[in-house]
Amino acid sequence: MDSCLRRNDKVETKQNYFNMKPVIEILEDRISAVMSEVAGQEKCSAIIKQASDPKFGDYQVNGVMALAKQIKTNPRKLAEQVVEKLDISDICEFPEIAGPGFINLRLKPEFIARGLLEINKDTENFAVEKTTGPKNIVVDFSGPNIAKQMHVGHLRSTIIGDCICRMLKFLGHNVIPQNHIGDWGLQMGMVIYALEKEAKWTTEDKFPNIENIPDASDLSLEEFERLYKKVTKLVETDPEISKEVKAYTVALHSGDKWTKIIWDRARKISLEQCYKMYKRLKVNLNNNHTHGESSYKDDLSKVVDDLKEKGFAIESDDAICVFPEGFKNKEGDRLPFIIQKSDGAYLYATTDLAAIRYRVNKLKANMILYVTDARQKLHFEMLFAVAELAGWAKKNMLHHVMFGSVLGENGQPLKTRSGENVKLKELLDEAVERAKAVVEQKNPELSQNEKDKIAQAVGIGAVKYADYSNNRTSDYVFSFDKMLAMEGNTAPYMQYAYARIKSIERKAQIKDVDIKTELKDIENLNLSDPSEIELAKHLVRYSEAIQSAVSDFKPNYLTSYLYELAQKFSTFYTSCPVLKAEPEQRPTRLLLCDLTARTIKHGLTELLGIEVVEQM
Ligand code: ARG
Image (cartoon, rainbow, N blue to C red; front, side, top):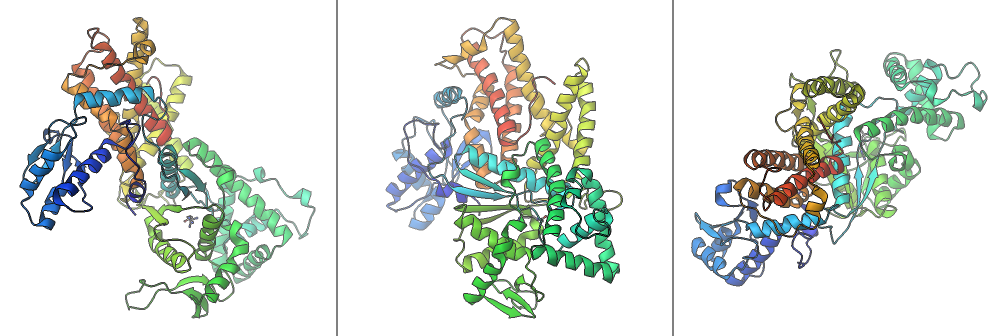
């Protein structure tokens, strides 16, 4: 799955350096071409990585050794031949050969300066190139279930999915978010029972006036969830209730008007809460993106019939199953992908197959990403296999972007003391409450109103940033103390770094330095101090960071980049005076400040959906 986007998106070289691919890709193209020429081989790959240690420069070319092995020649000699033929003097200092045949590259300050100037002019896009092959990409994320409050388990899917959408959109893809909510399965009988019998929406009369049905807002989701849970317990112990619940499911699934109305209300109560949560989390999901399981109800029988007709689905142990190749249990038996139970009921799997057909045929998706936790790995592997087998999706079109669990301090999945899932709302409330203390400590003079606003940004930002900064595929331990720390790779640290630069700019204004005019037509930069060069280099690598975050669907590449940026800024600001700098130095330094602030702001607000604050 990894890098599927970058590889497919190769574009021709344009004249303008930064309004195009990241430097690393330009170098990769040029060096690969020379390697081919020198070795007389058709396709060579330079395999360039960022240097692990700045001592060795900025990039390391690793591909020469493999090529030497392939054509049976001395790797160091081959490296020498490549370097001799190579012309990258517009970008890099003269390359150095190291070890058995690595080539080390160091960017030229002039090149970096040109890059900065281009970014400065391209205020909205930071000279990040848009893809030349835009795709229709469906991103399936969040997907909460009806009658339940969103809990910590939904946090990762919701915010990682949103970040992926934001990044893809920024690169020019056509992104179609889909919120595949759980609003149809067998549990709907319990949902309706909870409202009719437990919330007493229906009295003796089974068909009262439709106008008399309570409005959705009459019942809180908290109360609804409590009743729903009560029913799930009742069903286990009381066969009579279990029967009634089943009857409700059947009624709903066969189009009964009354049950449908109750079900509609249930959806409304649940979704209203979700939309509030998305707003609070700055996640771009709304009613237009809600396309839940219920929307596929009429396609389920067709899915099963089609698979039967094609000969892929067969009856086994009373159920209708597909046995895709490559999936076996410990005993070596093929695993079934069940699409219809003996009582006729369809499953999660059936709905997901119908959703693929809709997304490919109607939404014209050429890629579908599923952002869910790793526990659904097998489900998606089998789903993809079946969809490909049936010819409903092409190879490499479907990707499971999975993630690990959020753990408590005890290393177990985060739960409340009574063993329940932690509600997302409560988690965010506490984060904001704790952030208030941080703000109070940092800046007691601010007005209460300002403090509250900053605490919102810091609290919510901290929860999101902590999640993003952990490698998506690993579990991580949730810690308020860590995520709210002012030091380290945290939201408050990043927000503070931004606010600090803003305060420098405010000071400049007081001193009558008009930054906007000073930077607007700036044409020549004066990068001399090593800390200036380091910072500038990092700034021009923003597009590289975004590209790699997108190709692996990993927001933590972006947070790492931003954190490093703030650190490099700190080093620069310690060693280089800005407002008191000499006239020939000041514009460059002001630009470094301004671009750092702009990049942090863009990364946080536009790509991660985390607010910045002007002072902190
Ligand atoms: N509702 C599901 C859950 O809570 C997530 C849905 C994921 N998307 C999908 N197409 N299966 O686990």
